[in-house]
Length: 175
Image 1 (cartoon, one colour):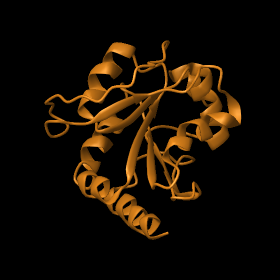
Image 2: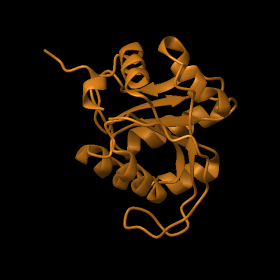
Image 3: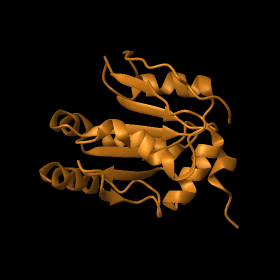
Image 4: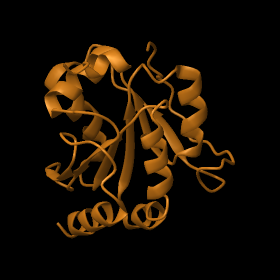
């Protein structure tokens, strides 16, 4: 029996928006990050559109992760090799987690991860996981500029590797 994804997540949605920098081992100094949020009452099939609406016209890589997930953190370090180049080309990196990522830990960790960060409620995380067929984390969803899916491994999970991410991003950037 599988454990619902919400059962792996804890409470509090960050609502402030911030751009900051801090030296850290996982990324270079002066990392730009933004804390984003969607209203707690947004649920079901409205969650993903609420997140992606701000990125219309851009290629977006959504990383579903948690602070306590070792493979998630390892994947973030691995993608650092290609991330700056993709960001320069216009790929937007979006990180989505739920409440099982303790607020204080999440607040500290995201300062070292450039991109936009969402911390969903348990219900939102569960709804989104169910909608996407999410089997585990980390997993990734890449969207074309028109919002259609360019790449997804949400039903398999795991880091697919830099080559797959980069190749799919390069194709998406041409559409």
